[in-house]
Length: 330
Image (cartoon, rainbow, N blue to C red; front, side, top):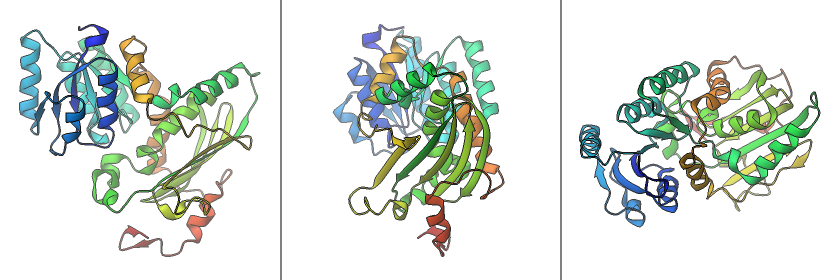
């Protein structure tokens, strides 16, 4: 394998939203991007990082080039996977079979049983899968985790998680709007937060779904050390009045009524993730199981809107009569 400062990368999903963060992380850590794949060719962003990268729109040609690199003694050390969610596990297996370690975006898989298959392939190939769980590396969250860990056992906190990130109608036409491919709202935009919450407050004891729609989801969880009301949305109409027209995203985590301010510091977390991976401290497959079990269960859980503590934003959603017109959020 190449030295840490000169790792050789491959990238699957170069045209996606998250790919530029991976490109920057590769560049910032002294790596080289040998080859990239995406069926869409809107990948001009690569010129800002690795203009000499070999780019492919067909998987078969990409596969052939990756194998050629291996045979010529310049193998791919790490395969970064930024493809649609439902393809992650297949692309992880391709990376491992190609002799590379994988760096996979969230969610690693859509269902818990897929984790076992990946772990088995790790054992067979001797390669490793590193998962991107960047919120764990945020200094504010890391500090919160240390404080909770130091508390006496049995202490339980009340937590409110609210995350609204406005998306246009394109979202519902893309793979992200298809639950079979994205896993739905709770999976696509919530899995990082559920991972962060279980990392800080311990494993889940109860998992309740209050609302589930194309554009938002809400529920209640009891963790080992927290009672959590959560609300996730991609509909701008769910933004609090004080931020409507000013911001398109609202992110809030309150612990016992006190806001945990972590709105800054997100842009560098992928680079920090890569540094940890290159140092041999990447998050292994086993770390994703609690959050994947949560989102997988929420997908089919019966809605019980009066069970557990309900997030206050849910009332506004229920009151919004005619929320869908011909299947579209309004």
